[in-house]
Image 1: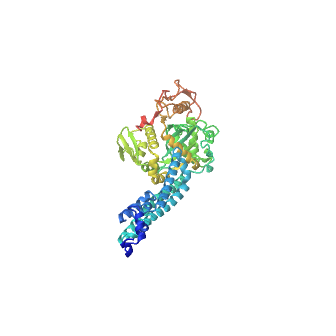
Image 2 (image 1 turned 90 degrees about the vertical axis):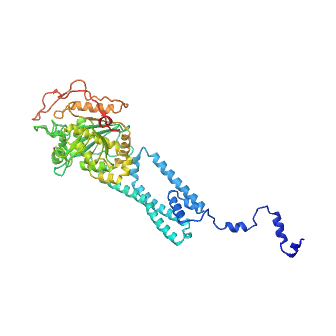
Image 3 (image 1 turned 180 degrees about the horizontal axis):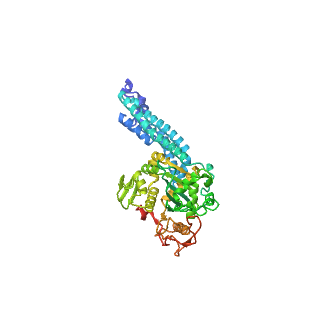
Length: 518
């Protein structure tokens, strides 16, 4: 035993344990005492607390990891990743069928409300986990106020989503009726919404029911015939002054006007008067408010197709709708003056322009220095431009405005139950080919129409719309002159005469050619 051991300066057993301990190792208990206190890379500051709290809004769990609570942090990150992946899968699986989301409005509203509360709670928990009590009194006050403002900002997107969904649902319920309320509309089957048809036909009507007019005059009438499988669409534009239109056999109007609409009058009845006449004369039309049905029958009989649905848009409502999506880009061939007889209200200058709602309205309606047929050509350009440029992104980003403008639609018989499938069809149309055909002189004469020639042109345009994309030649009629029975002023049928319009071959051209649309 050494002298030190004898006097008790260094205990013998401690010296022996020290001799057996590896070099650099700490005595037992010393490291444990120090590791019992949480250690951070750097002390928290006001900026770091707020920064990590904000990061946790984007990446849930980040603040917990920084605070040393790894298990909770990793769990939150895992849950967040699963939620994002699930949402991504749902969107990708339904990208070609976006209409399905219309049936989820209630679910989306509930999810938005729950999401707002969950995200606020998550942000608050992240802030507490960072230990704001370590900050000074001033830091605690400032961080508390900042987190409160951040909480409002976090909940706002969820609240906005819920508001937009409810606004859209309210607009749809006001505009689109139930199929059960209209006996003329076929029931909608989810497994076969188009009832076995390969083509569905929509009548798009622009109502010219201004404040100084009695009733509704259909200022513009266009039929959009959509091929269900491909989305290829043909737009048929009919002149408002088309005379003596016929009605399907067996209908009340056909019995009352066997020789055509108001054929007994000196100047005959015009197509744009059919709707108003039917509503004003329910005893002739077969019931009250039969204007839309009678006009659909007349136009369907004219084109040789069955019109399935109609949508009448008030002209001022359309202007609001154009403004809601930020205007329409259209190539204006020449200056268009509008307002009164001399165009004193304004001028739409030639060139490629982004038209406001008011300009787009008058671009299609102005009569200054032009006739009805020029107006028809401009109107179909406006419709085509709207069909192409009202993209889902524009509609979503301006949804509140679009919903308000859509409520200005006068009427439609498109049932609410069909909307999901209609949205899916509209997506197809945007990526498909749109061609257009209008029935104007010299190929077609409005005062003495050749019904056979019109139907042949319509059938040829529908057939050619399904051919591979190329310069499509659509014959408006056969090469031989056709004959038609023309009503005289007293309503009797005259002898068959050669049609006053030549049967020249014309093309149903694409809107890109006609209107400069890309």
